[in-house]
Image (cartoon, rainbow, N blue to C red; front, side):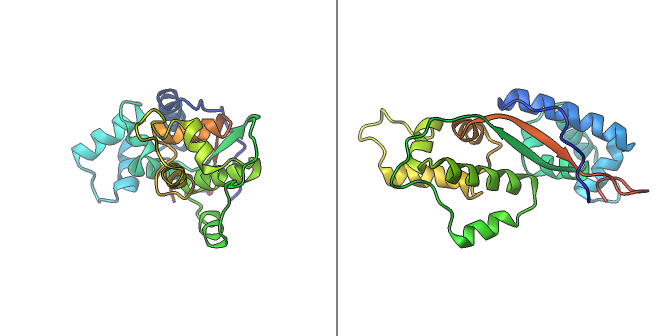
Length: 205
């Protein structure tokens, strides 16, 4: 399906991102002519959504629930036709290290073929780390993933393993720490890219 050109850029701050994404989701639902009942049926897949499901969905669309960035919220965005949150990178001053981030062939294949919203973002971040030659240890430091003042200080193995969780998809980049990782990689904004709705059908299928 042909992607729609990116719409308004989203800020990398999580609260601002949540607010902007909720606004974009409401506008998208209105454009597609989908009521909250329609959306709830597609997201939760019941014949008739419960009042709790409708309440949760409304809170997500109103930006009052962080779940919009979790699994159910991402399913809602997928139903609305969000294809990806495409990162726009700025310049980052990186001193090349001997353990610069790399991707094994298996990880590259797994991430590169994951077409979910979260999967596409993870792959973009993993490729970015490789492209700029940032080590996982340096990424953990810059993103504040470890307490450098701890006694004893975290080992390089700990820092490498912590950062790796975000670059392999084990931990979501749409968490507060995950967005810190993206900013450490030079994230300036996220561009939402929407799929073109099929004729006679909504983007949710």
